[in-house]
Amino acid sequence: MPPRPESPRPASYLLIGPPDLLHDLMLDFEAVGWRVTAMRWQAVVTASSEDAAAPAPDWPAEVTLAGVSHEDHEEACRAFFLPP
Image 1 (tube, rainbow, N blue to C red):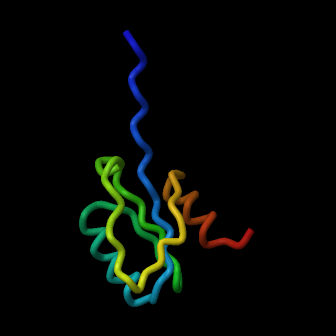
Image 2 (cartoon, rainbow, N blue to C red):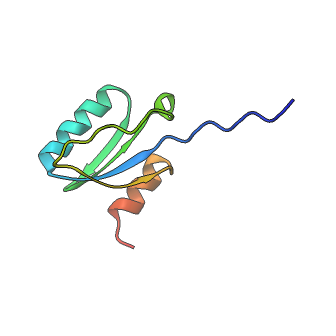
C-alpha cells in the first residue's frame, strides 16, 4: 500500500494593521476555531487543522499580509513578534 499523503499544515497569516481592526479580526477568527494572537500593530492568525487546506481569507484593505508561515502558531508568533 502506498504511503498516505501528509496532511497539509495549517497556514499562519502574519498581519500588520491598526490594533482595533486586528482585535475585531481576532474575535471573528476565534469564533470559528482559528488561533489568533495580536500585539500592537501585528497579529498571527492560524487556521484550524480542519481548515488547513482552505483558501487564504480576504483581508480588509487596512491590513497588510506580511507573510505566511506553516510553522505551528507559537513558532509563527515567536518569529514574527520577536526581533532577530
